[in-house]
Length: 345
Ligand SMILES: Nc1ncnc2[nH]cnc12
Ligand SMILES: [Zn+2]
Image 1 (cartoon, helix red, strand yellow):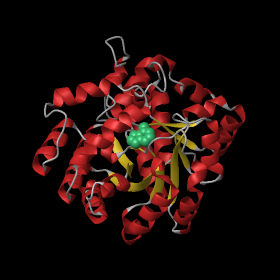
Image 2 (image 1 turned 120 degrees about the horizontal axis):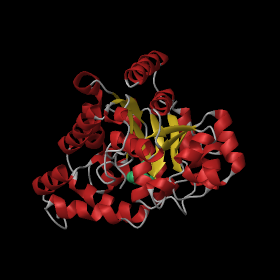
Image 3 (image 1 turned 90 degrees about the horizontal axis):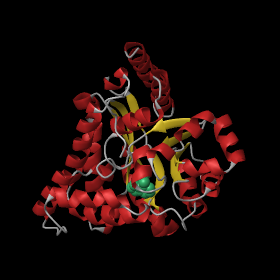
């Protein structure tokens, strides 16, 4: 994997710009130490209890599905409200060190409910950590309830109804898991239900699915951001539309390399996205699996594409502009980016 080298410009040694993280699966932050500890205390079998053996597998995913198979198997270790609290607290501690000021994180309730964990324990643990993130870590943190597309539309509607008693604990809905074969059109009804509840809407599209998946997410689900969106580049009209509308893409560079969406960081479409005038944001997706947190993603693209400090500050500003936050919060964070940009010169 690409990492900053000794030939990197001096300003790269400065911390990552203050940033928002808008494409982060909270379950994808499960580091091997929590994985092993939770497995032991909950009596869940793992293929190994050696963190080095467990994480060695993460270097060799053939594609998205190969990752998801390992990821979902690992998540069987999470059983109690305390497990979810520790998961979220661990992430927030690492995110604060990586420069994150705002996180809008996905959680996949269906995974846990299907493991027999009550929904209230999942949401209780995550939201307990998130609601004190500002005080503890200086991070504004909110949740997006994500539907597993491969479980289908009916299951999505069921979990959505079940989550309504916890409505105040999440600000939007999302769509993730196996993409190809599960187009956004299947989820039009549940996204309509979410819109009626005043929830924000985002969806993974164009990670492995074609540009038609991105068009459907925009037209049928009414998404305000596209998660990944890489394959939108195959459709010039779509690229023009995304650029004109300023629709943010939550791009995950290291994830794309680890899951073979791109053959190498050198071939990542980020420069083409920027040239096309797309509103790109940088994110970590599942950082426990893909070589690092959001700072590692900034560092990887900065080193690979020799981004200027202004370029990095623009990516950070895009991330804050793309948040579901208040104008006052955005003004505050954009000011912090400007301070970073000037200090980095
Ligand atoms: N990159 C990704 N794409 C789709 N679903 C996911 N779930 C966790 N990470 C994912
Ligand atoms: Zn993702």
